[in-house]
Structures are given as structure tokens and as C-alpha cells.
Length: 184
Image: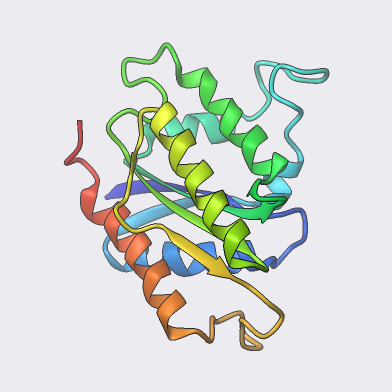
């Protein structure tokens, strides 16, 4: 079975970012992938990469999962027109893969999702995630999801009410799953 690492969320449990990432994860699972998810609570526990409190042991569960992953899903809220510091810090831990035989995210499809209250911040966040993915030698999927979220975006069970947004999210998950093992 192929494996995907899902990385994303906010410090707030059940955030809109975690809800939309879950939709993409379910689509990837339905396509045959296993998912290992590192959410906002996990990312909040990580010390700043290379900063005070950082040690070789910090974040190693996530780094090990990324090392073995066939694909990656990343979701970030848009804060002030860019990715959140929480997600950026987690992505900085990928530096631990720099000297691997398969460095960084080399040869792996990466599905990207951005959430924000406004369309402009969601789009600029998605573009930032694409730039970071390229810098890490990953392959962004052709479809990325920039999802405008409001309190009315989800139903009482966390399902997304906008059918177009749901289709985008499912396609991101399906594209990561479908491209795994095909890129170099």
C-alpha cells in the first residue's frame, strides 16, 4: 500500500483547514493510499526549527513518515496573505531530509490546500505552498485547492456544503494518490 503524509491545520481542534484536509485524505484513501496525519496539535508541539529548544529528536516522527512517504498533502490557513507560521515551521523540518538519497520531497507528488476567509489570501497562500514545494523538489499536483471558508462553509458534521470546493479537495487527494511512484 502506498503512503501519504498529511500535514496541516491550526492550533484550534477541528479547524476549517483540518476539515478540508480530511476531505482530501478520504479521497486519497478511497484511491488506495494509507494516510499518516500530523495536525495542528502536533505542529504546535514542535519547537522552532533550529531555534531554542530544538533537538535532533524534535519532529522525528513526522520526518521519518515523510522520509518513507510516497506522496504528501499540505494544508495551510492563509494568514495575512501567506501560510501560517505553524505550517512553515513544520515544513522547515523537511531540512532533515536534505542529505537523504531521495532528498527533501524529491519525486513525490504534493497536493496543496489553502483556506482563508477571503479569496485573495487563499490564492496567495496556495501560490506560496507551490513555491515551497518546488524548492523542496516536490511535484505539486495540477489541481490545488484554494478554499474560502466561513462559518457557513460546513455542515454540523464537518462536511463541506460547497459542492465545487468538495470536488476540488477530492481531486487533490486523488491526484496525489494517482501520481505516486510515477515521478522522478
